[in-house]
Image (cartoon, rainbow, N blue to C red; front, top):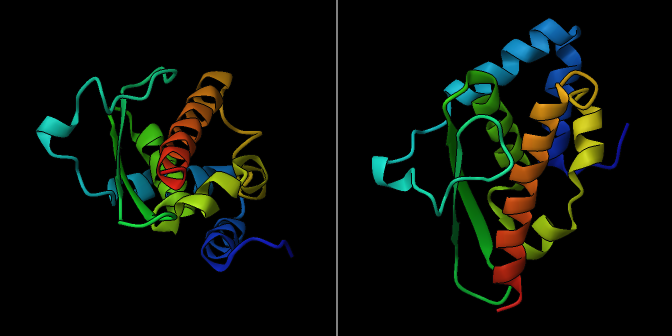
Length: 143
């Protein structure tokens, strides 16, 4: 058992229950299909995540306050990448900016058994998404 927060541990438990990588891969794709689509105007250069081979857009919104709750939405032109966005949003969206900046993604991805099964290009893209999410949170936490 790990020391992940409940919302992350629930996702880890779901992935563990699935067993083999093929089932997990399909689950990631299904998570992506469940994401609400971005509005057409939200797919622009300002929301595009650089460093991803596929097109990825992330939109962040912050509540008021010194340590606001951050909400993220995202989209991609590739099914598996959209699923990876969904995984990242499950980890980070709806959390306080300070919690987002303090949450290390790598141990979570290891717990989900994602790290060993993604191509280097996909892993780099996932890292770029997490960097963007944490950078947006850090900017809000410091205001």
